[in-house]
Length: 276
Image 1 (cartoon, rainbow, N blue to C red):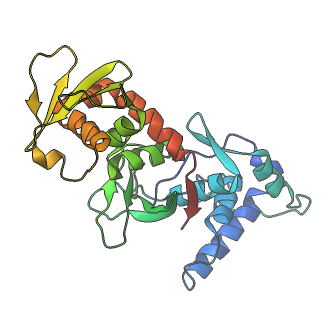
Image 2 (image 1 turned 180 degrees about the vertical axis):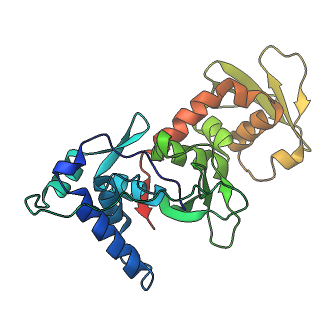
């Protein structure tokens, strides 16, 4: 069984009788034994809400993507559009009462593989998102042949937060942030080949010796040699200066981590989510 969200707090009985919703769910589940795509997650999610049952994680996600529901204080709540969809069902026909649904046993997360939930697109990049049965933990992967990687962010934090975490874990976000926001102190290097840079008050200089790149932070007396492996992926003085700072200042992430996350979240604002 997949994880279920707490049902919305709106009184849905006046929009669609529970007995009707339960019957429709039973029919869909019966057809589902022969056709795995008997109904969309958004439809079954609405029916579960009307039946007083919590929707699955996949259903909740589809409802949010469709704009029919949203998360409020940890609960799934219908949007005005979702309420209008349910209100279209007539409520004047009398329906026999059905016995309450027997709760399904909760499956605890263990070694089970996560179930694909949605596809997240950030620019040209695409990521598959999945959820673990019985857990709110999400996972992602960039290719169907790759292993799933667990995420710290979940649906309660929103898709932008999920996208921001993925951006930071699939790209060299710290170095990209430095390169995009650093300022060169002067266009021309000094006569001895030094080039000075500043990142919101953090200043440093680099210079080439012919065999190595040296770095010196403002306030330091000594130059330090940057290990060649930290520069192997970049060319150009600006790019090498950014990579050198990331490599040599070990607590740089602690210093500017919040700024990098805010920058990643701004990039994530353009993310698109497609239900699977």
